[in-house]
Structure formats: C-alpha cells, structure tokens
Image (cartoon, rainbow, N blue to C red; front, side, top):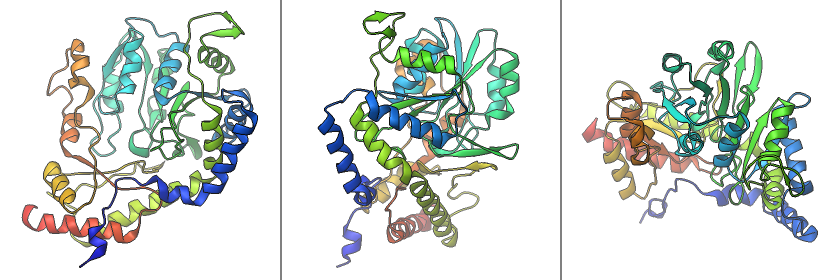
Length: 388
C-alpha cells in the first residue's frame, strides 16, 4: 500500500506555518489577556506603526486598522465622499466585497474586463469606461500581483478621479516603478487589505487595514472606524463600528516579521509547479496555461491559478485522488443575481467569463511539500494523457 497517496493534499494547511511561531503567538495572546485591553489601544497602534515602517509610508502617512478587508473598502470610499449615483470603475472578476462596498453607498459599480494573462483589470478597458460621473478607480491586485496603475494614474489625476487599491490578496507584493519599489496599497489615495486567516498575512479571525499617505484622509479614516466620533460620545458624522481587536493586532505583529520569508516560499512553490508541469509536457497550445508574472512585479502567489477549458473535469479527477483544488471565481460579479439591477448579461465581459470557466487554484502555502506538488503534477499528467 502506498501510504503517501492515501493522505490528502490540502488546498491550505495553516497549521504548518503556525508551528514555527506557536510560542511567539501564545506569548502575545497572554500579554493581551494580562492587560485586559481588547479594543484598539497600544497593541493596535504598535502594529499600525510596524505596518507603516514596513510599507515605508512618508511622514504623515498612516496605517489604520479596522474590522475586516470588506470594511476597509467601505470606509475608504466613505472617506472619499462617494455619493449615490457616483461611478466607481472596478473588475467583475474579484471577491464580492469589492463591488458590495460601492453599492452600499448607493454608488454604481462600472466594470472593466480583465487581462487574460495576469487576471487583473485591463487598463485599456478602464480608460474606455471613464465618464463625467467617475469618481474612483478601484483596482484589485488579484491573486498576489499588482495592477500597473502608474500607467493610468496621470489620466485619472487630470480628471480628478481617486484610486482605492484593493490589496486584500496582495499584501507584501510590490512593483518596480521608475526604478523604485512601490508596495501594494501605497500607490493610490487609499490602499485596503484584509487579515482574513487565509491571507498571506492572516490573523485568527477577521481584520483589515487602510493605508494612506494623506494625513487628512488618515484622520478621517480613524474617525469613521469609531462611529464618526471626534471625541468620546461626540459624533461629527455617521461612521461604522469597525475596530481592529487588540488580540488580532498582537498576533499579526508576531507574523509580520515572517511575511517576507513566507512570500519567498510561495514564489519558490510557484517556480517548482512550473518546473513540474513543463517537465511533464503539460504546458503549451491546448494544454495548461500557467500564471504570468507581469514584468516589474513581485508576485506573492496568494493563489496559484492555472487555466484549462477542462477545469471541472480536472478538478473532479484530482478530488478523486484526494488532491484539493478550488475555483476563484465561478460567477463574475456582473452576472451575480444581486447585481441584476445593473443590467449585466452574459457576453458583456468575455475574458472574465472565460476565466470563470477555466480558472483552477492549486495548493500553495508555506509548508507545502515538494512531494505533494509532484503528486499533483503526476495526477495532472495522467489526466492529460487521455484529455489533452
């Protein structure tokens, strides 16, 4: 009996990386319980300061913790005074929260199709979608690599259009712009990220953060996350109850120094996948399409997503062999029932719709073993012999 093949290959196993930092995390948790200070406070501010240093924010710039990545997007749009009827351009191929933040304010999501290689929004299509009502461009740095937004930023600035970056899947990634490294979330007016446990920098529950280089925006974001409160029980505007817990901040502060190492491991796993697939003859015309790293980008592979028209068959084949995969995302946002009022229909965004039928995320996480990747590649090769 081959016991190795009896074990499952998980899509994600957070326990493997946690083993490296178990003692540090427990000490941080004990510290918070010893103080009994659970909401905002010193733990949160310390983590925010460390994030500001990591991101190399300019003087006056700030990282502002909040309750989730979804709230970060909503708060960012609120801070930029987005009103009912305003248009926000974004991608239809992303997690639901990107568009829900827009519609919750009565604004209108205007979708632009994607680049079929990077899976990120097409800047050419973004430019076509700009109207006098456009107030914000909301790029999503999907699966771990950045949108080259510097290519459209001058046009947007000329027209008074703000940029809110959805960096929930790309914290720690960067892009080289004019010889300078710029980290995800720091190029626009506000950058938003998530600390959901599955993220590259993940907590032990929900959590999020907003980043800005504008001191006035930072002050407003801090106010909006506590019900619009200027001072205790005095409310200057209607905000949200969206605070980062001290426990989450303390745990994330333990994890932050390990992030670069973990991201490098993900990049090594991605390189090994490419070697595995290419050495087995699984790439090329009519076969698997592997992820493309845009020139100038540092891709952190929050997800490793391949493409094949036989996606559902391959997924079922791997599941039978106890190899887990996942689909991100099976239905683009313009076809979601709750957004039917926007009038979207099949065929409006052909690249996004095609990707939703072909994309398959493979296991990629710190602690994934080479033999597990080899086993997956062997299973794909077996599938390919009769299908490709």
